[in-house]
Structures are given as C-alpha cells and as structure tokens.
Image (cartoon, helix red, strand yellow):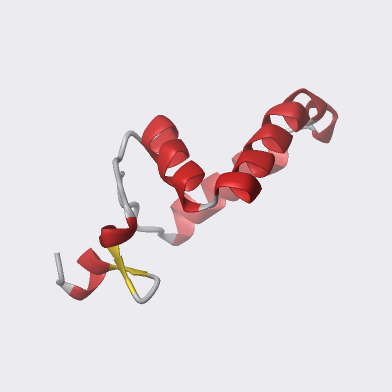
Length: 77
C-alpha cells in the first residue's frame, strides 16, 4: 500500500485522466465488478481481505483495525 499526498496539481492530473476514460469501455468491466460485489456480499470481510491481498499486495485482517479505523493511523500498531 502506498500513501499519496494530494496537491492541487496531482488532483488535477488524476481528475484529467479519469475524464479521458470513455464510458463506452465500461461494459468490459461489468462482469468482473459484478463478480467482486457478489463475493463481497456473500463472504464479507474474508472477500475484502482476499481482494486487498490480490490487488494491493497487502495482507490485512480484522486485527488491522480498531473501531473501524486503521490502527496504524492512531499509532496502535
């Protein structure tokens, strides 16, 4: 996981790149997104943790959070 500090310039770049995307291409992602949502609905946190590991290359579990907040942000970890 990486943290990115947003500046006015980087925010503008991100927004500009998002606006360049054509909504006509979204159809090819629909089945993948539907599959992910269905798995999260059926498996809950287990699926979220697995997808975090798959996409973000970070292994987390329920102990990673305290009161719904990443424990590292509070200096707990």
